[in-house]
Image (cartoon, rainbow, N blue to C red; front, side):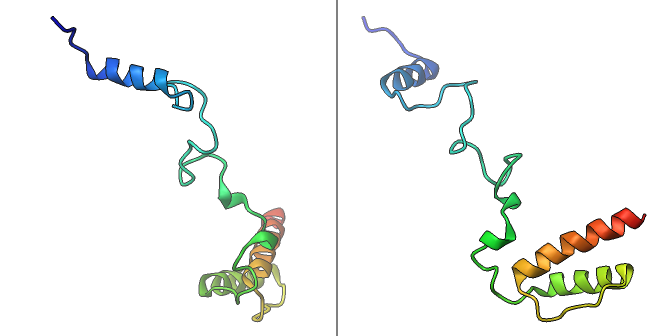
Length: 100
């Protein structure tokens, strides 16, 4: 008579046979984490390292820069790249928040 195995038993056997298999409750490695939900991800990339950083700023960036320029009294610059606009947005936000 053969022994019946449960799905969990079969999973445990596969994990035991594969040394690279993730262990339940074990540490999460960078390759295991979902980049969209990981607490630290690619959203923190330096604008200078952006692949598309040389492209003209987006409409959303331009609109936000106009607003921040008005709030901080800094002249609006329409010919920025995406990376330059992102950096300037951060600077203007910090300047605006420091005044508050």
